[in-house]
Length: 160
Ligand code: DAT
Ligand code: MG
Image (cartoon, rainbow, N blue to C red; front, side, top):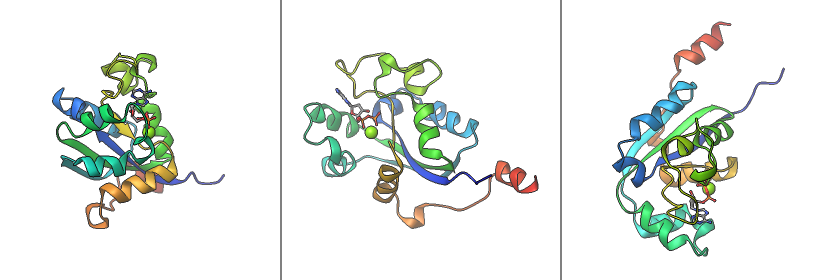
């Protein structure tokens, strides 16, 4: 049996999630499944930084609103590590539109509006694929801000 890949992915609790007091709730959901937090900080980003992070969306009609919301206040940025972390984190976050995100997901449980109405207020950001994850982790975190340690789950796996 081949060993699944250990990946790193970026998660943000966006300003709308921070002001709603959802930092703990969001972080808890990733910890619950055994994903490892290898970096975490609070940051208030500039319009320039927002354009680097959302470079794929800068030309889109919803970009001005997206930028306004992401620079509106501090965000929590975290790097999560685990087997197939990119896919697993997206599953926990839910789909882009809160209206169609299923209950049990962060967006499905804590927001309900459609993309056409405050669509950018969907609480969290998570890297969409491995390539995006590698770029985003590098944009938000320096090597010195990322840590290596073993979780209890990893120790259990080693003991098996
Ligand atoms: P995701 O955040 O699920 O990766 P995305 O990368 O396609 O989604 O878009 C980034 C953010 O932009 C998303 O969280 C909400 C907003 N957004 C995306 N499509 C939109 C649309 N059609 N109208 C309004 N906001 C949109
Ligand atoms: Mg995306």
